Each structure stands twice: as structure tokens, then as C-alpha cells.
Image (cartoon, rainbow, N blue to C red):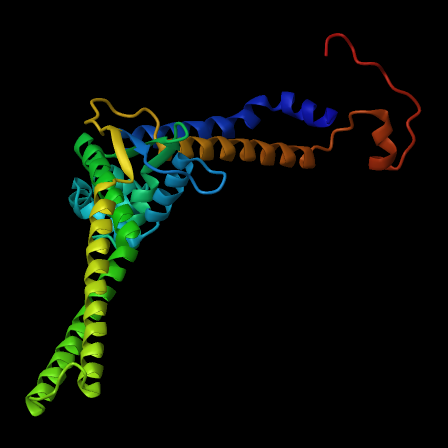
Length: 320
């Protein structure tokens, strides 16, 4: 450790240079990054949480899962200015590059669904503010893109939540309606059988066993038809109620940002990467200098380095 400190103080400039270069490069990258704007919405979550999680934490996890879907990301992009921006700035989905800094596109092809999803996920931040309240922040290259994307994101989240909640009811309603159509055919056949029997046996009365059997079957099938109608009406009422109860309530709508965000996620990552790279370069340079140093610092090092015995030592002078 003593030798490391001696080498550090003896080569301060040489060791600090890589750190300064890394920080300077990082600062250049951050300053050359395009401007970013943030639009934030505060959302109240209706309902409870899952397990030990609060409603806000559960909803944040649900939003994160939606952001992993290509279909969901494409819907948000199509319903907001983000889609047009990515189509006209196709290098935006490929991260930082020198060409993107001077306004060029690194690829002339339309961004893939995966690229749109990754871009959206990287520019959306979700934070739980309380048990039932969370914030949704969208970072965009322009104020209009930031606000428009935030509005579309909330709209698509609400629609996706409602669709997920009502899918079971819709499937059940479709099943009832299909069974009702089949039952209507059965009832019609029953009534035709009764009418045919009466036409063939005009003197038949209610006491006629065959006629009574046909009428009983028709009555049971008609009751089944009526029960299906009741089930359909209930399913329709439940579906209408589910569509009315929104899973999210926006308490503070996204606003058009008037100022640039100082440090976004990409800038923070660039700064962290620059600092880490600088310290790693300093550590590597220090290790190399220690390895190359052949200076004898203490008398105890002489036998190991030269195979000789030290017979004396002169103390350091005050002028050194």
C-alpha cells in the first residue's frame, strides 16, 4: 500500500489524466445529446393491490408489463406524435451515435416493433407516490412529443386495463348468445312437433300421453331459452358496469413542458459510465506503474531483489 501511495504521488499528473479525459469525454457526450423534455401525469389507482403490494405498486408492475408488449407500444406510437417522430428520425431508436448528433439517420428503414417498444420503455418512468398514487413521466425530444406520448400512454393503459377486465365477461356473453341461438332452434322444433301431432290427431286432448310429453319438452326448452335471456341481460349489465369503472383516474394531466429536462436517463447513464471508465483507467495505470517500478524503497527489499545482504542504511535527508 505504501508503494502504491508513493507511486501515486510521484505520478499524480499521469494518473489523473485518464480520469480527466474520461470526464471530459463524458461531458462532451452529454452536452452534445439532443434536448429532452419531460411531461408528468399523476394517476390515482382504483382498486386494491396484490398480496402485500400497495395498489400503486401493483399498477406500476402492470404498466411495466404492458411496456414490454410490441402491440401496446405500437398503439401508443400510432396514437401520439411519437410515431411520426420515429419515422422521420429513425436513428433515434438506435441510441447515441455521431451521425445522429449532426442530424443524420443511421438507418433508412422503418423502426421495427421491437425498436419502438425499447425506445418507449427507455423513455417512460413510473414511480409510486403513495399507496394509491403514482406518477408517469414521459421523456421526449420535443414538448409536443413528450405530452402527446404521455396522453396516448394513459389512454392506451386505460383501454388495455378495461379490455383485460372485460375479456372474461365478453367471452361469457358470446357463449350465452351462441347457446341462445341453438336453443331457439330447439324450441322452434319442439313447437313444430306439437303442432304436427295436433294436426295429425285433431281429437287429441291434454290427457293424451304423447301430446303431454311433447308439450312438456317444449315447456322445458322454452324455460331454458328464458333463462339464457336472463343470463345475457345480466352479462350485458355487468359488462356495461365494468366499462364505466375506470381502473385509473388522472388527477394531474400531462402538461406541455416549457423547459428542457436537465438530466435524463441517458445522460445519467453516460455520466456514470464515464466516471466508472475513468476510475478503471486510473486503476489500470496505477497497477502498470507499480509493476514497472524497480526502485528499491527499503532495505528489506534488497535480499529479495538482488540476493545480497544490506549492511547499513542512510536516513533520508531533510531536503528530499
